Structure formats: C-alpha cells, structure tokens
Amino acid sequence: MTLTQLNYIVAVDRFKNFGQAAHSCAVTQPTLSMQIQKLEAAIGLILFDRSEQPIKTTKAGEALIKQAKVILREAAKFNELVIEDKDETRGEIRIGVIPTLAPYLMPLFLKDFMKQNPNLRVVVEELQTSQILEKLDDSDLDIGLLVTPIEHEGLKSEPIFYEPFLAYVSEKSNLAKFAKVEQKDLNSNELWLLTDGHCFREQSLLLCKNRKKTSDLNKQLLFESGSLETLKKMIDQESGFTLLPFLATMDMKTSKRLKEFTNPVPSREVSVIYNQHYRKDKLKANLIETIQKHLPKEVARSTTKSVQVIDLPSGHQV
Image 1 (cartoon, rainbow, N blue to C red):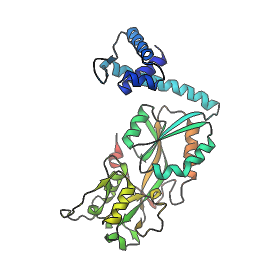
Image 2 (image 1 turned 90 degrees about the horizontal axis):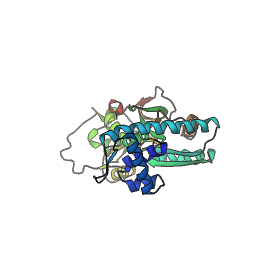
Image 3 (image 1 turned 180 degrees about the vertical axis):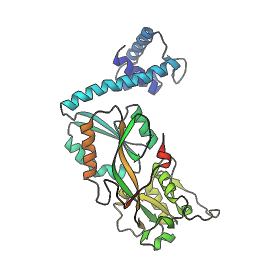
Image 4 (image 1 turned 30 degrees about the vertical axis):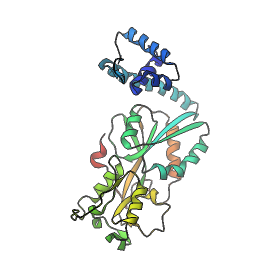
C-alpha cells in the first residue's frame, strides 16, 4: 500500500469516474486503474463497483477511503511541518470565501498578502458555507472565510472581525424618515432576502424575528436573490428594505437610502476556519494580520458594548 494508491482511490471516490480521477492525478487511466487493482488484490477487497455508471464506492470502500483521507492529511501535515521549520511560505494556499464577503473583503487585502508571500500561489473560491465546510473536511481547501459561530466536528475557527449591519431602504419605506434605524422599527414583511443557503439570510430573518408584522396577502411581488447587488437594485425600483453588511456599502457612503443602526449595532462575526489537521500556523497568522490591517475603522476587531453579535440559528450546526 502506498500514498500514491491512496491518492488514486480518493480521487476515484470523488469523481466517480476513472478518467477524470486519472486527469486530476496527472497520470494515465491505465496507470491509475492498475494501481487500484493492485491495492484491491493486496487487501482482498473490492473498493469500487465498476458495473455502475457513475462508478459506485462499495461499503468496504467507503470506510477505507475515509481512513485514506486521514492518512493523506497526516502525510501532508508532515511536509507542512518541514516547510514551517524552514520558515518558508511556498506552494499553495486555497481559500474559500462566502459570496456576501468575497467581492468586498478580498480586494482590500489580497494584493498586499500576495506581495508579502511572493512564492505562494493563492487560489480563491467563492462558495456557500456548506460547500466550504465540505471542502475543508476533504482538505480541498486550507482556509475558509465565513460567518460564525459554526459547530462542525474536525474544524477550528478564529474570529477576526465583527462587521456591522446597515439597512438599505426604499424612499417609500417608513424607515426612510429615520436618521438611524432601531431594531424595533423593522417590519419583517418589508424585508428583501437572499435565497436559501446564505447565512446572511438567516441572520436577517433572526434580526427581524418578532418585529412589526403586517399582513402580506396583498403583496404582489415575492422576490429572493443570490446577490446583494440585485436586492439593492430591486429596492431602488420597489419598496421595503434589505440588510447589508458594512463592507458591501463602502462605495455608497453618500446614499440617503443607507441607514445605520442605533447601539448596540447588530453585527456578524467573521472568522478564519480551518481543518484541525492544518499546520501552517505562521501563514494563517499572516493572513489574519493582513486582513485586520486593511479593515476600515468602522469594523471592530473584537466585541464591545456597542456591538450586538447576531448568531446563526442554533449555532448553524452542519
């Protein structure tokens, strides 16, 4: 049994296709197939049902591939410790970022982070929370930048900042008359939301829970979007309001539609999250320091009395 063979079976389990798995491992399909057959012969078990399309992992295969991922992570950790001891930042770092953060946070610090680490290849993926957690589990990502707290076995997190919420309101909304918005003034029926799967949607609903409610039987348009920018444009044309994270409002400071909240200001906790086997501690610390260095003064690095952290429902267990 070799690490190469373990890499091959993990790839086949991921792609459910020998050709795609071979391509991802940069080998020919016959080479990959032969090595997997050798492994199966050595352990006396069939790992894949090749009669199924797509290929199906057997029950025995599922248990062994799960352990193979652990072995490969530990092997990778050994190499990472060697690099860490040499104080080198080489190779690659793969970062997953949620959509309500990526377009606003990444431009603030990414250029500086890459300048500080010229030998490092940085790969960034914009993904929803559930996708980031799955990829961290499988070591397909090194770091996640997302909203916490999240309870997920095998993952650790470190809060790095607390981002305030603001209301973006239609001129037809009752909120338009206020200089600042109080939570008690929110009407959940006027709230425009992101689609399911976005943690900011859940926090918005939680913030508006038990606030003013009116009948929506006469509401002609029910609209949800995967984009904060789309929600803003809809509110420009329609009525109601949406909630925005502070970083998404930095290019619209003079907008009369934008309303701050009174203290304590509802905010979301943003954290670096990573697999418990991840060992590039110096690189992670450098990433956190660089992000915090480029945050605007309105975004707190730690909680204060003026900050009300809006948790995800039930700790957003996944």
